[in-house]
Length: 372
Ligand code: ADP
Image (cartoon, rainbow, N blue to C red; front, side, top):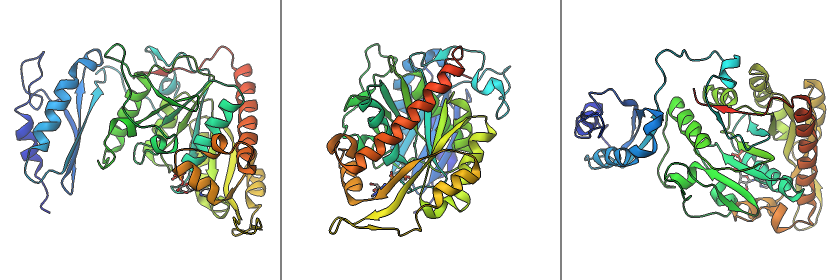
């Protein structure tokens, strides 16, 4: 496939005019972060945050204009908020990064926790969803935000289809299932659309998601982070006023660098690490009920102690966990009496204890999200 020339895309976008400013979005310098890859195109249109919702037709028009070009397989366009020219980007870990000057967002969430992993495929999303359901089972008001914008899996795991509605035409109402509110990029982007946002675009998409969702009153918002510990994750960890982070690891990785990288990332931005969950801890055989310690089980507990963080519990590698979460009926709700569900609920209880402690310590500092 021939690479689509950026100029061709910009030429097409010159036919798209900002309705309020009367000129096209290219000459107004509103097109940012243009990326093309194998026929897939993604970019952002930078707009004044006040005008965000009103410009949805403009976004669609831009998407259509690019999609119509020969050789373009998909076009993904997001609206991103214009940064004020006078406001310098905050340094990582600075107060301004999490407690910036502007309007508080999500005032209804009493606490926000991140579920993170050093790399993909360790069961981070599976843990996040069962943890959220475990917290809900204990009577807390829970939301889950799928910030894994590269591979959103919450719609499938939570068994939710359809699109979020909007009451006021500006903000979105989260979807809900099993008593847990849920928001995911997966509701907004077609499943087959490869999301090739650059880091900054991913962040602005997430910021937008957090800003414009009517979560209502929540005791805890669980954020399923994108896997890894790169710049995108670091910035997210900074931008979301996290109460704490839960690190998910498999036993063989925990002794390796990955989980440690995750820990260090949160420490760098002063987010307390609530603890480590060891997933796929041992193999639970569905035939004989036996337990096989494939990855020399137990390392996580020792390693957690060495690293000075709490060990929150272990979850076996069990086909029941895969089938239930991949099928949209996570084990905590579909088999609440199973050992697996109990293991997740125990982890949820430990996490809640820590959230409560931290809320009691920092009573005055209700978490806030700020627009930068
Ligand atoms: P991540 O979010 O870390 O990329 P996922 O939660 O999407 O990982 O899990 C990857 C795959 O592994 C999924 O198919 C999931 O069902 C499966 N899986 C996760 N944890 C377990 C487990 N404890 N036992 C069996 N399968 C699991």
